[in-house]
Length: 71
Image (cartoon, rainbow, N blue to C red; front, side, top):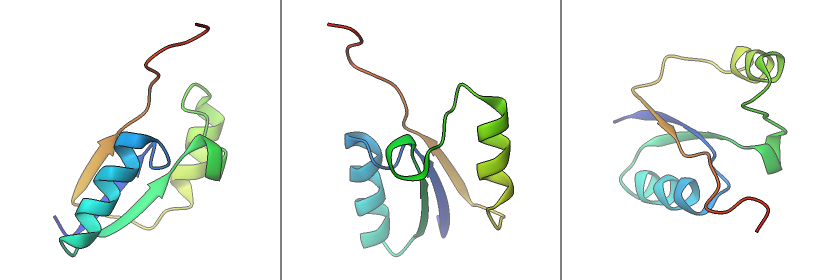
């Protein structure tokens, strides 16, 4: 993979994958809620963030989610 988009890049899994892919020479573009304000539950937010990116990408990783919510 030469160019990879990671959504959820600031979380544990996304950050780890980003680091490994960069070490392997990939150009990694990351988006996240905490750094970029991306809200994957809001179509307007997703459209706004994705429309700012220059594609194409050779790979896409979705690393969003929560291990525990409200507990």
